[in-house]
Image 1: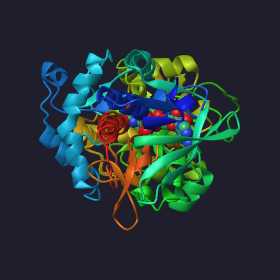
Image 2: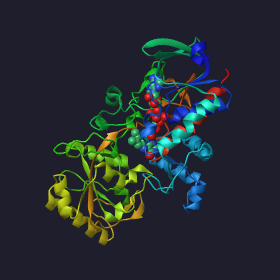
Image 3: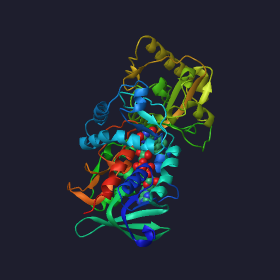
Length: 467
Ligand SMILES: Cc1cc2nc3c(=O)[nH]c(=O)nc-3n(C[C@H](O)[C@H](O)[C@H](O)COP(=O)(O)OP(=O)(O)OC[C@H]3O[C@@H](n4cnc5c(N)ncnc54)[C@H](O)[C@@H]3O)c2cc1C
């Protein structure tokens, strides 16, 4: 008889993205009966749309590529990027368990492509994957391991017993409500709140003009359900839009586009970013969150990445943020043989754009950009390059809120913590729904990293919670 028919299960995992899959498999490995529910018809959430790079340090791949990195450097970077606003216990938990999770994912069949340098890393440690391939490996393992999976099944409320322990979850299946008793623990892996206007307005109203992207299920359900039981939140005020989502149909453009919108970061290979006035406005070496915040303040909140054929030649399939050739095929990049013609492609002033690129190239020749202080390609790494080899490319893009890095507060066991500091017994959280790990800033790859590392730990802890 299924858990839903019995009306009880040891561990209920709520939300079938990356964190949910990792939590469910790990709870099962620890010996519990497990039900993984997903409110949408399809599993995957934001995880399936992701650039799918993982921040791991000290891996065999890095060694093979001659990259000097270590868990201690990862810890230092995470704390510095988070401006020490992150919970050091969560950072330690991540650092101490990430290599084991890397090995676990590889053993599960996940394929990692060559390691890349990305935003807010002082050493190249982005381990790219294809998200579909990740799920093609992890999802069938649920059934093999004996995890029950129920799509179109939403958790709508959590109920605690007289001792305050979460014991029962209200579900909505096809519009009908029913309850399930949970013997050991509930793991919230419901993702973020980027698709919730009211939560964005409540936590980060200045980010409200950003585009909304990410999983349709990212409506903050986990935060709301935990809140109703008195849970605290962490880091929610630090959420920032990410720079670089394709915007081919921007205001004033003559193009209509309804295809997939890639996320491209050609500036980290040496491209520049200009606004609608064809002027640079920030050092492109900043993290894509800082770039997102700065571009939100530009006319129509638009940015235009500009690069040349030398950068196009570095196009790779994974991570998708550097798949320039793919973006050209999708029609979100425009191409021209001169900078002036490039400007005309998107309605920028050709003279101003030529002057901007000339001034930038002269600064590169002189050894650095004094205007906006760009000294490197990205976050202190990489030598600036001239943009002078035709054809040239322009990529209109916008800041987009697709991942929200704050959420319910958890302790070092990944138990949800109440506003009075006490744990909510029997309730765990992992992945984007949890707060406290990133602090004020975000290292690329650490969101997928935290889904896998913390998903596994939360699932195991819930399974072993026999109280
Ligand atoms: C375009 C894009 C690119 C990104 N690139 C990267 C990257 O390269 N590196 C990186 O580290 N991070 C990246 N991120 C962020 C990262 O992918 C996400 O933070 C992460 O995938 C979130 O995983 P999750 O399992 O916590 O949530 P999700 O994958 O969103 O899964 C949550 C699931 O819970 C379901 N759910 C919600 N509420 C309920 C409910 N009440 N009942 C049942 N089910 C529910 C949702 O429908 C969803 O399927 C990217 C995100 C996007 C959108």
